[in-house]
Image 1 (cartoon, one colour):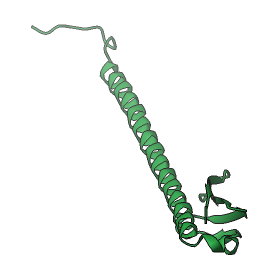
Image 2 (cartoon, rainbow, N blue to C red):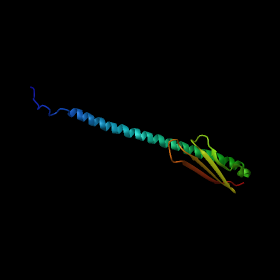
Image 3 (cartoon, helix red, strand yellow):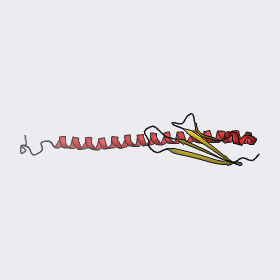
Image 4 (cartoon, rainbow, N blue to C red):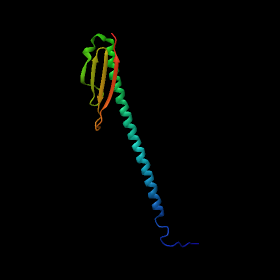
Length: 122
């Protein structure tokens, strides 16, 4: 038995449902890509903070080994390898040493900063 439907009563419903499904799927994919980009950005930022911390602590460790020569470590805007546009400034005030490391990622307007302060007793 053949049923007669009114012409046009169901035309395009499947197409409309398919378009809605594609739209929802596309939003899911875009959210996933945004989360992936955000995670990559956070990992990169964390890596550079670790590099800055390591460079500052390595210098402070060297100062602990040679506490009588602290004034020779004072520098301003010395290049730091491993950091994009990395600059290190060392201020010696008596036996207090402040190591400041700045870096700026390409394409960012905000500079990042790491600062370590130590008392070096000789």
